[in-house]
Image (cartoon, rainbow, N blue to C red; front, side):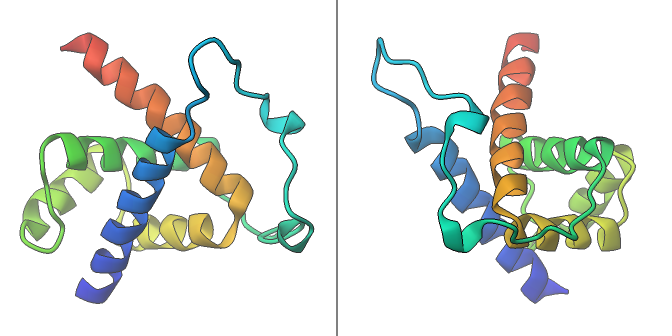
Length: 126
């Protein structure tokens, strides 16, 4: 289980850094998701992935809060489990969603979009 969480933390760090680096220069608009081209070798990957919008949003909230509150699943497993419970996810569900995101580039993009959106919402609430 600890191995999964270290992989999860690395994935989250990668996706968060990708969110921060994919911003267009000032004055330029970012193309809409359907305007972006997906490499041919990635088309159709993860077609059998089925993550509900609600579960994905819960997964993203867990990750935003864990980063904000510096809850490391490797060193604070109890805190992380409590966070999962507050967002209505089990460890197994969290792991499954994480694997689905890794397997599906479209889901990775949705994760990034939601991550930015939820992070901004939480910053405005402060």
